[in-house]
Image (cartoon, rainbow, N blue to C red):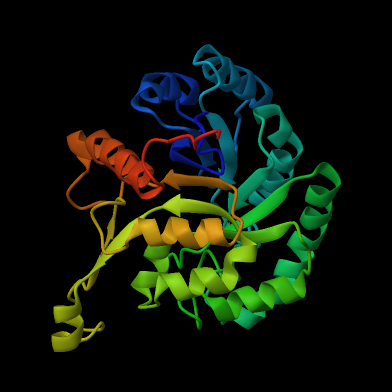
Length: 297
């Protein structure tokens, strides 16, 4: 790792599909961290074998990169297998050299946010205790998954009012946020003031941005069927990531910004890794560029 040791810049890697080989191929581009992600379930994945394979690749690279987090993105409030996989990942995180498990809070389908809180407490109170016992932290992704306050299928942790409720329901230092500006911009929230307000609960950052089409919003609104915002790879959207990293550093954040690709409307398909590597370079510049040591006298 270079001397920018407070914030690493990395990317997401799908855990189920040749993760170790994928990391081996892209690590020469300069990625410094990787979040290994599962969708709804861990399934038949041999986690011990996966940990050994991935750590072998990282060691072969000279330990220039690390596993920042493990992710599971199902609905643990309705799917017992997903809830069980949260527990499995908490137990195995140390084998990957990380102390962070991320994912959706889940949701009671098609009901207002407050009606999910009893079930949230039932599922995450024991998971929080399990994490505390193992020195692991849990971070909730802030994507709305097309849900609203009144209804949805996947995740209640998509807005500050819900964050206040869930952290009140399960008051644990092991619970926090997997934050990114994109999902807040989709809701027309200013990301930087929010980040300053919630910095103590930000455990992991996804590198994903957005482009907001203010001309569409002002002229046609957000309910006319016309797209008014696009998810973007960092460096191609509206956010100044120099400001984001400044707020993170001022708030004492020590973790990773892992690029969440596969969403950009331009840099996709054959241009996916082109866009991700450009984002990697951009975020490193926003972090301050190459490290320059201070004079010793």
